[in-house]
Length: 287
Figure: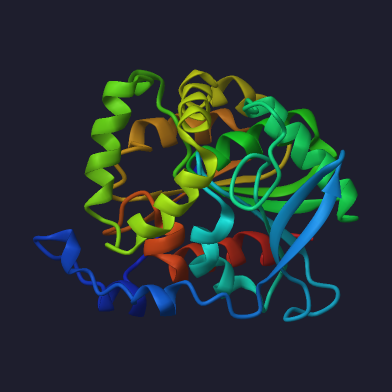
């Protein structure tokens, strides 16, 4: 198991630790959520209209492909801050899983393997035979399932704040952890996620949550052939240290990268650091 602890750097120094996490110097919403070269694109997947944010022209034509996978109940839009930092280095895709965001409704709530099956079908639809993947929270479970069952699809995987620790797979614990993490997020993120939750609807949110806490990522980890980087925020209450340590030992080619002074939603709150770790893990990999 290889463990890397990121050192301060400019972005973390500017967001120095404070007694109140709300004192972090987050950018306002209009700056943080500026899509830059990312643009909406729709494709047809098994008769369903699927939305994705894409940036294919900012990077060199031979740049590797990177797919970002969003968390439970959400769309890919909240991942824009990190995605924007990666558009010069990767051909970038941020799809909305069916039933979420601006993608069509499949007529049921997809479980984790069905979400991975859909990702496989979507890759055919957009002519993407293989890619690296970056997931946040529940998105990590979908990527792990895809990598375990469709190994040819996944080059490398970055799991930022993977869910859910076996000792906290209950509504009680997840509500507590969600509330604890919320204190580390910018105020405007609540408006972004509220829009996505409204699109998903209460029943889909509930069923998705149940799939999240019953899916056993640790059972799939030993079958993942691709190199995996687990990224954890030092103060992440949702993906606790013992769970991340366990996953890294279970993935045959696992590494752990810890970012100091931050919590769970790092694709929003620490985009520079997540992008840097992603870039190093993919672009500096041995040929």
